[in-house]
Image (cartoon, rainbow, N blue to C red; front, side):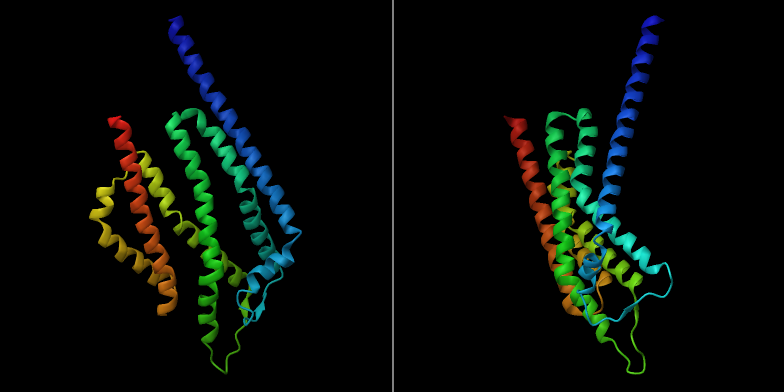
Length: 247
């Protein structure tokens, strides 16, 4: 009876310890993200110019008293999360590392930092190439009797959404790497569905972008390249695991 009681006490203590550590990590993440957000808020004018210069032809306005302030908060929050992301990744890693095997630790750590890297590449690609073309397409749709006056909140929301969508789309190789490392995804599956996946990629590109061929190609080609890269990553991980099993 005493042994069972001791086992239950150890289990309860372990759960409490994990919850305590989780709370500590979450507090650090929240505090650091808020700190960077407040710092970024002090540099809002150049940050807004960062979005406005994507298409200087638009006449931006705000139509409610709090709209511009909310734009300030959204941009500051977005930049704060980006700048605090290394700390966030480190804290997540420190929390989960104790529950992983040595090989799993390496895979997850690589995935965390590659995830940040590919997300930033996707966001930069969207900002430098895709957004100017899409916004240029929208600004060319004019009627002489109607003067375009775009809400700053709608404009910034659209830009942020596109940056996040492209950043998320560029995570495909990282997701493939993690699933392959844990043997959830096999190269045979990707090869069998290769044709269907390419069709899905181009359908998504057609849905996200405006109805012009140039912007669809600008999204479709990188996504197709990422799909092919994901297949190569899956094959490489699978071959590495096969060699480790035979050795």
